[in-house]
Length: 212
Length: 315
Image 1 (tube, chains in turn yellow, green):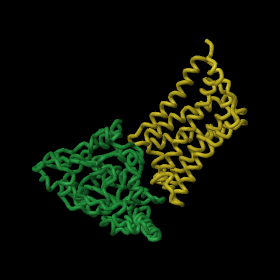
Image 2 (cartoon, rainbow over the protein chains, first blue to last red; image 1 turned 60 degrees about the horizontal axis):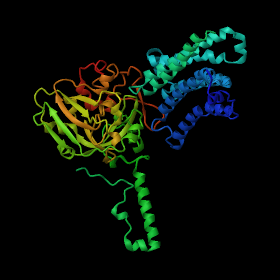
Image 3 (cartoon, helix red, strand yellow; image 1 turned 135 degrees about the vertical axis):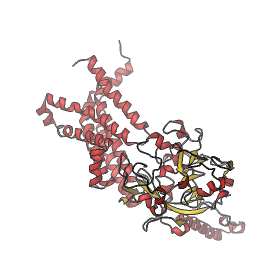
């Protein structure tokens, strides 16, 4: 089957020069801006985060975590389907950002939302399923983040791949956490469930087609 | 008829520059200055800033540090799923909603049922301005200057028949005007209910306004329930029907998640929501959380309604 010319051209795209900067902006700007907006709302009386800035910021950080997970898991399919091998370099960047923003989401909840209320924190982490599920997602990301350095990849060899298969559990737990936390408006959790189902489903389909 | 006070940015007849002045440039400038000053002065009344409470109504059950929540928050942070599930959706999506003409049906176990045009409906009671505490089940709270009539007056006018034990309220069902009703987020129309003795309590208000003005659409125009000792979702909005009945009415959130939202839904810091603690609350506009009070601070007035009841089971 001959590939149409325009598809061949898209597949042939090289990494644009601005790409590096776009990635840096995408990972470094949104989460810190949430804190900047919170401070501005409380100190300057702005309304960037609306009437309940602590809650809104917490939500935004959680949603950002999900979005960085989408980016992380989209790298390989994009590389295989579109043929842009150069996106591979950014997978670790997206993955680490997902971890750090997820950590920020948890710290925001513990420090700003429930404000170090020990009794509430321990009850949340032992009795409230959606918080346990979210916390598990964060915990799973810890060893993945720690072993993300080049030295660790070299040292762990095949074991690194086995360990990092755990990344697939993170979005499942993350979206479940989100879905369980809303009252009735499940539209967005459904949307992201579909996205992750696509990203994970493609891997299953691809693995069956081309056993590696 | 409700008297609607001039909105601060509305021009009053006195603000219109008389023709002779208009043609005299120097005096015109002076008048313009006054007009701008008047508008700015009136604008300062609008509540991003604290306001003297006496001008907004009679405080009921307020704690010493309770100050009215700014207008922007009261009218910009709303749960009104008929207009969308985000807090900012109701204000944005209800802009073109027309709350008049409006008819309220009063029926069920009453001796005098009727369909009332809103203005006639409101003749049952005296319109009052009352400042209440408001506690949402999501653990945030406000202090809101409502305007309205006592629900008890409406029920007395209808004359409950023997056997009437509960009151059921129903919101308008009109997906063309309430876009949120096009998706099955809750069972539409939204319904709520009170036991008859709760409904007869003098604190139970049918509100027609906030901050001395007609209710904005996002707050449940033109008529909503306010039950300050219960979680906010009991305060059903845009009411078209009030029905007295002998059995406990179905309520929208109870149908949606019966283990999370009970029929009573009294504010109670000792009974947690299954997914979060109700011991504390975040007052909109404040950073540090406050302790939640039993019956939202109205225990002295309403606790006797529930004497002998297990409030853990009847959440």
